[in-house]
Image 1 (cartoon, rainbow, N blue to C red):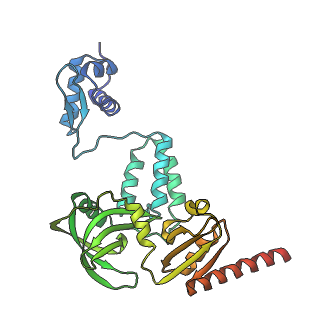
Image 2: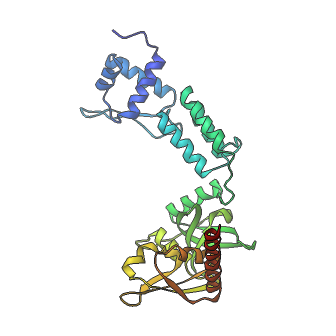
Image 3: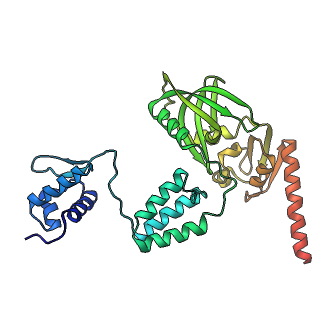
Amino acid sequence: MESDTSPTARALLALELLQSFPGITAARLADRLGVSERAARRYVGILREANIPVDSDRGPYGGYRLGRGLRLPPLTFSATEALCLVMAVLDGHHDANDTTGPVGSALGKIVRALPEPVAAQAEAVRRAAAPVPDRAAARPDPGATAELVRACSEHRRVLLAYRSEAGAQYDTEVDPWAVVVRHGRWYLLCWSHTSDGRRAYRIDRIRTVELLAEVFDPPVGLDPVAVLEEHLAVGWEYTAEVIVDAPYGTVAHLVPSSLGRLEPVDATTCRLTGTTSNPRWYAEQLAALPAPFRVTGGEELRHCVRELGQRLLTAAERAAHA
């Protein structure tokens, strides 16, 4: 005999079972619910009437599974999962308390769907963390990003309206290869027909995206992350050439490809060559190497290394006399 649990509650339990056990048979669903197979099918019917897509496979090995549709089935989170999700959103979007924005609105929906004790913890974390702004963050427009991802997937050429760091605005026609996130920055790696060369555009500086009819074939075996790192190390204003007094095998894994090309000179030294738009930042990266080095090319870089070294020496001397 079935219990007095309401049909709606049974249907929700059935939904949770369909989420947890894709392909579950009517017999097993009935057993889990403690009802007859006929009743289990009735609960599946209730879900379908509520516009929740439930697919069924016939035959001895058939069963039920949730289909793909416009409406998402309810999600359940443990307290740890919910808090980690909220923290991840806050870490990436410090404007998550803005309920008028898409991130804050989505986060609010998740919090409201949580059980009261878990929601209270999530809200406490949200209130404490959200007021801290990330002034260095560069958030790309979600709509433009989605269009670029679609264009990459469909191998469609696009027309971009772009604004450079200096404020210049121009249009460029590109074959979008991949969207890459590097150190909190979103880049479009592509081939520019306007410039006739490989380019990496900051997506937060893209003002509009227009999908074109032309299609293209992306490079075979493309490693988007590696290509982006290599691209960001060349073509900048200031040159850099550095001799590192350590075997290549000792420091190769410590030198990011964004600094340039590292190659062995002999058994005990190697050479780093590249370019940069920010020699001060480049000098700071060199200072982190666990090996002696000397700048053999790039007057701007040499000046910044000398200035950084003097600043560190001054700090150490002050500490010694304190």
